[in-house]
Image (cartoon, rainbow over all chains, first blue to last red):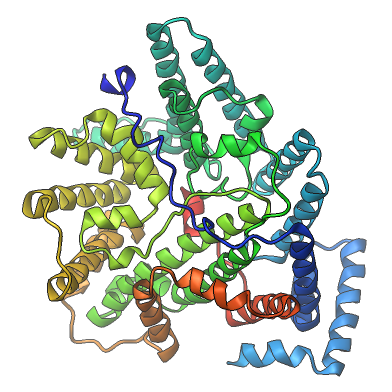
Amino acid sequence: MTYLSHPSRSFTSRPPAEMVRGARGMPLGEVARTVAVAAVVAVLLGSRALLDWTAALPVSPASDALLSAAETWHDLMDGLGLSRFGDTIRKF
Amino acid sequence: MLFPTLNFALFFLVVFSLTWALRGRHTLRLAVLTAASYLFYGFWDWRFCALLFASSAGNWLFGRLIFAAPDQARRRLLLAGALALNLGVLAFFKYFNFFIGSMNDLLLTLGIGRDLPFLAVLLPVGISFFTFHGISYLVDLYRGTLDRPATLLQMLLYISFFPQLVAGPIVRAAHFLPQLRQPVDPADIAATRAFLLILGGLFKKVVVANQLATGLVDPVFHDPSAHGAVDLLLAVYGYAVQIYCDFSAYTDIAIGVAALLGYRFPQNFDQPYRAAGLREFWRRWHISLSSWLRDYLYIPLGGNDGGWRRTRNLMITMLLGGLWHGAAWTFVLWGLLHGLLLVAEHHLVGRREIAAGWGRVAAVAVTFHCVCLTWVFFRSPDLAHAVEFLAGLARFDRPSEVATPLLLALLAGGLAAHFLPRDRLERIEDWVVRLPRTAQAAALGAAIVVIDRLGPDGVAPFIYFQF
């Protein structure tokens, strides 16, 4: 069986193409700051998604508390007009 | 745990923070990544974790034995045994009931009529992928492409690393294990590219693939007899775009997530529907699988060794490639059709390059429609459904019942994206990095909310999870 006797090495030793090759590097501190700011923006604008997620959690005292907090948060964002961002996109 | 969910976002935030906090403690970092990967896998069914561990530990042990074997004959024997074990486990979990069902059908046809018993076997998620990872490790070690065996911890992480565990891309041992030997560099993370890949992947999955699936593909494929030729044609085109967006979304997100943790994965898709031939299509579609099959099956079988042997090797490779996708005759036929088309292309086109211009446009259109024809078998639940679907393509008397402007726009956009410039990602990255960092971050957060709101309610599992 050729497979087990003298296998070709030419293909497997060639490195594959990568989608991140040549990409610009970013130091860890900057990455962490980007992730943190993105998370804050997502929490501010996506209060409806947070509410949907907590409502779908299995029922438990912890999930009840989370749901209550998510409702309060969503009401707050609604009052500030921030939840309209997501609602408008949904209507589209 | 699916990528486009808040569960995964929270899981990833914890893993990202913890593993980068441990960047100075390399072994502990690998251990935490391994534990996180097992936790990720355990979300489907914790019992599968035992199989994952057994597969990794078994391959690790065989790898050490192969490396330490004093002569070629013993190395060959050990490799053959290890491959048989890997394929045996895959065959049992994935193909046992398919084999029994096919045998029962055959015995009934022959009038013998014995009912062979089925077993209640659960199909572990991603078994085809982690089996191929294990084989890649053993063969790379045997061939010398990998210069030394992995430690047990490296092996456990290589097989289980959560971004690629359940649907690839198939990462070669010789490509990934050297990355696990080096500490990651916190000063050079390909973060902007990773965020773009993740956002693009989320958009393709949540907006394009899910909308096309729920609005067009699923209703038509569910009952092809209720639809006319226009809807059936739209559903095939829709599925071509859906499966591309679904699968390439998964691998783009996987590549992005791995990059944020400091690791590099291979490219898996390269605008496949712009291919001007089936050979080119397979160099652009599921690249990590097609190159795996080429290097670990087609070439060892003899590859392009001239004449009928090439035909035989192509047919074996494509049939097994089809069967790899699923235990059903539809996948076998899908592989068979691709094999036949590749053989026909070899005979008709040979080594000639297809020139630019109208000839290439025609070749791209023909290739796309050949691929679409094979998707009918890939998507249909059984052969009868597929035949019914193809027969319906002659029913021109019914108007479309499913076409909407949104679905048509998604369909057209999904196809048009294949003809964007090759360096589109680099161009977008160049534009993004010119923005202030805080604006980039805010845009990332807002884009995630936009994508979530644009998609239908709920997230369907990725198509390739079933393989």
